[in-house]
Amino acid sequence: MTDFALKISSLEKIYASGVKALDGIDLEVKKGDFFALLGPNGAGKSSTIGIISSLVTKSSGRVKIFDIDIDEDFNEAKRKLGVVAQEINFSPFEKVEDIVITQAGFYGISASQAKPKTETTLKRLGLWEKRSEQARNLSGGLKRRLMIAKALIHDPELLILDEPTAGVDIELRRGMWNFISEINNQGTTIILTTHYLEEAEQLCKNIAIIDKGKIVENTSMKELLSKLDVQSFVLDLTQPLNNLPSIAGYTMTLSDPSTLVVAIEKDKSINVFFSELSKLGISVKSMRNESNRLEELFMEIVKSND
Amino acid sequence: MTRNKEILNSLITLTVREVRRFLRIWVQTLVPPAVTMSLYFVIFGSLIGPRIGEMNGLDYIQFMIPGLVMLSVITSSYANVVSSFFGVKFQRSIEELMISPMPNIVILTGFIIGGVARGVMVGIIVFLVSLFFYPDFTIVDPLLTISVLILTAILFSLMGFLNAIYADTFDDISVVPTFVLTPLIYLGGVFYSITILPEFWQKVSLANPMLYVVNTFRQGMLGVSDISVSFSLIMQVFFIILFGAFALHLLKKGTGIRQ
Image 1 (cartoon, chains in turn brown, yellow):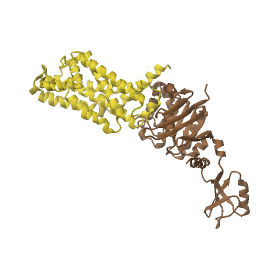
Image 2 (cartoon, each protein chain N blue to C red):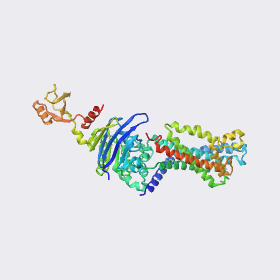
Image 3 (cartoon, chains in turn cyan, purple):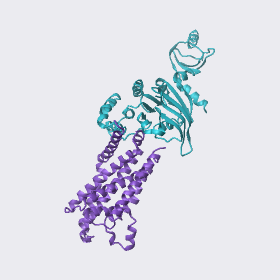
């Protein structure tokens, strides 16, 4: 019995145009993991997912899904896989319920067997009321949820979510995060690609960053975040300032008289900084991170790979 | 559940989806052949037919019926598969099939059964319409008629599938039906027996594959044919095997569907 849901070794993809999208990547995703695969546009994320899900043909390398080599029995490997693709890929003219039941049928599940599961899944995703509507009449967010319902109908052991919340409003996005976390807690391994790094930071246990067809970082989320050397905080001040204050060891800027931005290095204390502010008679109303921590690291890693 | 049962469920699902698709748009898929063929029966059968007289010893309208049924079957089965498969490529719902564990032969068979179902359904509708204009029509050899009907629908469904695999644009799926199929069908003995042609054109006509399809069907329905029926049947089966194997090869290779 393998411990890995996915094992990729020396995977290469060279498109007919000559573009080398993947340059021999190695990747392992443990069973039950919630794994983030991040990278800038054109880095190779979609090619990787495309190869795993058979939408793209690999040039060389090996891919194993739950120890099943896709070169040996891809159909068996596909049974364990659910994919929420980046683009909407169902017929807009079919009814919501029919789309999910048909998808189950492609996995060998008869319509009578698929009906109860379809009802449960559509209810959990808030789509049951829309079951008799043509898919084209759904809003963008509901279409995304339908994509998830489709991918889950055969109870996959590995679920790949390729930017599942792109273009979805924050309320719906948070609802989807909860739903996906629940699925993961029930034992389904999840691989997520997203441009919302806050989403990845909040949900994922492990992370790989891909850039220019190579894995440039592959570690646990906790370990990666601990590498952050400097964090920037935005402080909303009670009273506006006319001049930029000076505190030794801390770099500050005033973005406006009432907003102070400070960069605090990893080995410096926030408490010390606040006591120094108090000594200067500056009081702070509220504080927040200037940008997402993962976002800062992501930018650093990608820049250093240039 | 056994693997075979799962495969059967997959095939039923795809077939039901394909049949549901053309039934949902029945005004576009089932009604137009009935209307067009009614016009042919009125104009060429009832109005002009009596002036033409007999063709191969039969009333002209009677001679024309198998040809027009075949014309409808060929165009409908081809159109069904080419538009449906290109449609799933265009809408990206092909990904639903590719991601699933369905074997390629099941995918191909599902689309072909969809094409055959529409072709046969349209053929029956056109035949029923023809009975309004020639109620005394009796089918001479029902077994041969049904065999040719199904073989032809399979053959042209496969051709539609191959067309859709290679098609990148909507133009690509209309070029073959407009510029290849339609002229070949019209010149393939739907409206006339090649015996009325000069000898040279008779020989040229023998190179037209539609002539064999139309005449074999006419043999089944009326008992008359310009060509050898057994040769025609063998060729149909040969091309079904050839095109079927080629379509499976393209699916395996991912031509037109996989990067």
